[in-house]
Length: 322
Image (cartoon, rainbow, N blue to C red; front, side, top):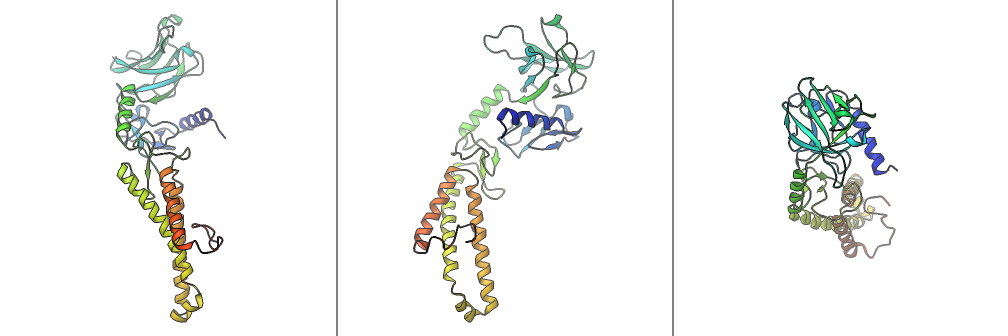
């Protein structure tokens, strides 16, 4: 089992293996459209639902696409061999026609912040720390992109390994996203199951897609309507189980409708019951606490109404054959 840090490193390694003209975005290498003005080196994986930069790992968001970011709001983390250059960078203003970025020092940190700037004379991105090693460039990249490239940096006087950039959201974007999340029922990211186990509904977790595309539980009334539907589905499943039992004995069906008609009816009822049972199982697999409890409540009510008198092993489970 991988730790969170090991998983993050592995996902970054996968991201760097994407072929030219593509980038790692939402669990896969996605081709960067040639129509993007920033090109594949300037594109960032962003969610069309939230407008935020998509994380490398969970939570997963199927709306993540390569997009040209607003360079003024862009924030990224740098990891490099020179410890003084590692940290979070934000925009400082336009220099030589492109946005320059400066390191955000933590409170109480000594020293001067590192800088990433575009050199218009030499046509390259440079990373340096003022007052360190005589202001010499530590790392550089000759990729002519609208923002500093994620990888492909070269060492000048800096210690290896070369920088690796991970794009994030700016403080303004995070603050805005936090406000939106507080006002909304969920955080706007769509998922058909919570990836880290059971979750209670809140504004900080993804929105459930209820079984089929388009049934997005992104508002409170939709979510609780679905919960009532889960109760009804559990109740009706126990009815179907009882209906299979009521259709017996088979010899009576055979005499009334004929052998083939009796078999056809039994198979149809079996197919409907099992299909309905697997749909109920998929609801439980969303790992939504409320939907799971609603489903169990419906099954319990249905069992009490239709099947409480039958032997416990008459039907193993609603989704699986006896």
